[in-house]
Image (tube, helix red, strand yellow):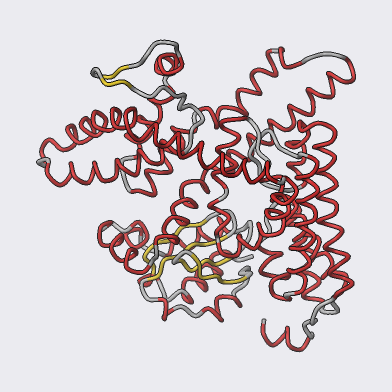
Length: 468
């Protein structure tokens, strides 16, 4: 692929460099905020080499490319002046976006921006955690040796757990990028919540007071919601201080006052509120799960990839991260795994059923990609495009997720859902792990067979050659 040529062609069909307000990317998509959407040629965009489809969601034009998106993005930013997408005039940008977006779109966009950059690190840590669990179980069952006490295991386990333990620091940085505040100050606030002496104080038996005010005791390591609220509030505090403090002393006084204002505010107000919100979200999900694990698994397994189409799955990602951070396990991504495998299976069913050579190539590639956790090529390039395979995937994903819920499947880490992350779910025990495997098999082979049997309106070779 000539990524420079692809980037130039995409930018041209987005209306040119002057039509770009903001340019970012996630794991599979270019995310663009345009100045004038009428200048965007969606039909030509979808015909660009490497582009799977174009989606308008969360107030953004999302160009779905797949796992090559970073290479295309790197070429596009060479063509776009930095001041256009970094947007020096942040207040004007915020006002312009505010007019165009509803509150739900802004919330989803913020969640995506906060969590997307850290997902690769969390996924990598999750893989290490899963492999360690499998190795530890093997040695315990085979030789009766508990390797969890060995120094090698402790070191590797620290590597796997670090991203969760220091999550407030990491989220402090990503939140700062989204809420447009000083990244280092935000990280310092997060680091304070992880400071060893502070942790001992907040988890000890004595009552904790700050300037005579009693503080709600809580452990903020591995927490998610408190730091997000804190940095959101910091954005207003910093904006206020920058407005009224003279320029000559701003470089020293603004960060000093920001820290002195925000830390007490976090300890007294926003920290406890964030803990309660996080516990509340987890409680609601656990309530639904405990009411019927099977129905909960079926719902997530069936509709996860439907939510992906609208970007709404991002609203569920913090639940999985928060559960792992607080309890060391999650099941929401186990159920989402059924959805991913079902998309891979439907794409495979299309591969065997279609007579169109070009569609065969796309379907096989999309199926393999979905097996490794990237479902957009299967969703947009094959299943949603042909409609019936998407329905088959939803049905079989729901059945697979229901089996996982019935068997009590869960993972001991947050990890992208695919064949490489199967070890993450091994710690659920024989029944839980077996139900996870059976659920994945049902989702994959069930959707492949159902798609093949039900069929779809095939794309004729002549039509395909004219439209591509």
